Amino acid sequence: MTRRELPGARFLRVRQRLGKYRIERRISNGPRAAVYRAFDTIHGTKVALKIPHPECMDDENLDEFRREARLSVRMEHPNVLPVQNACFIDHYFVIAMPLGIETLADRMTRRMSTTLALDFTRQALAAVAHAHSRKIIHCDVKPENFIIFDDNRLRISDFGFSKVVVRTVKASGSGTVGYLAPEQALGRPMFQSDVFSLGLVIYQLFSGQLPEWPHKWPPPGYPRIRSKLRPKVLWWLKKAMELRPQERFRNAVAMENAFEKIRIKVR
Image (cartoon, rainbow, N blue to C red; front, top):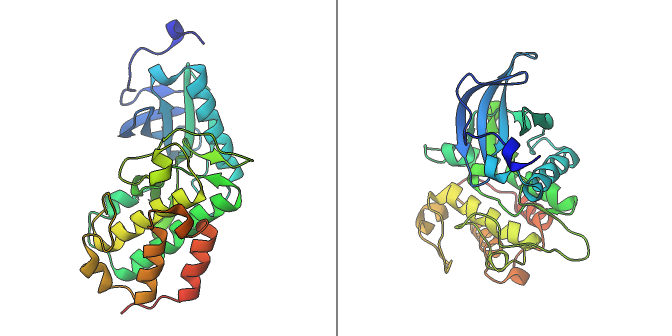
């Protein structure tokens, strides 16, 4: 596809049709793609459509989006957002996914019981641990990439920056500022980088505040989180957020196992 053939408008219009999908509204907009709520006119269901911006429809970016779709297929798990379909429709590359209720970032703006926060913690751990067990580093763990469905089912999404671990990992410092581990910001992502990001997400989940650089312990909001969690859990969380990757859990599988051994009890 040449750039002359690319769609001109950056965003799709409400009620615009893409094959069997009818656009209802734009849910979010990122640097490389937008996500829309749409109606599948054949199956009669609501879906989320991830569609790259026209300027990101070059071969390099399209390879990344194709890889994201393939990784999601490999990642079948109750806490991983599945890809229902990925194809070209009217010169657009469209990734169709189940439509959730809201993101974890949205849910964190409202009051939440400690019990529910613990449940979200277990599900987030299970999602990232599953990725790591398949030798996949997510590279963009943040509240916006966890989607909530009915019955508070949490599913991780957006494997666009993910890296498959072979002998070495070649990557840039891609990710989201605020949740990036120091080594990932320098272009050296590893399993421990996802552990660090997940630790920040969980800390924010319980304290209501996102720790900022230089991430000195205890971060802001510590009195609030200390009132909710036992000392062993606080140690577990501190270990996940260590600045030196070798001092963190080696991956999310080890982090999840340690979490389960603690047998958390609500105060």
